[in-house]
Length: 136
Image (cartoon, rainbow, N blue to C red; front, side):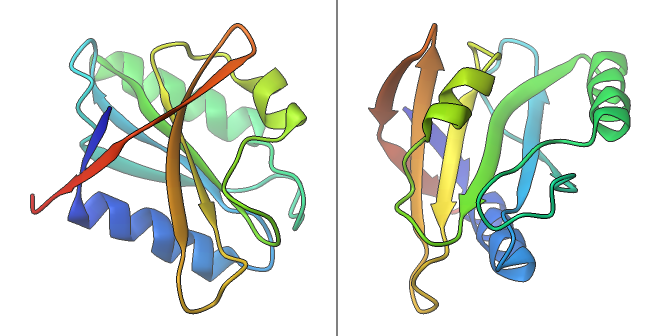
């Protein structure tokens, strides 16, 4: 189960809406082994595409080094889908390489209501998990 603060939940959705019609992407870091997302790190979609995302390799290296220096890991890896449901595509599944991470997808296909869902993706197996949004 993913437990995430209202503030971080809302920041992910705001980033997804801001980058629409392109897919947005980023991570939420947290202390290694804590499973607690605490630090919002929006990233650039190097593809600048409405149907695909990819972290810029230089930016990803910088972010992952910064997490290492802070004894953090990617607790949440998020991106948006702009015209489809918030479910991992085959490409999303093939790129999922952080077994400890919660993979959050936000669909911005409905301008009035964002669909926010979380998955565990391990060895190509996708399992949806409940999301609890806490006040803090």
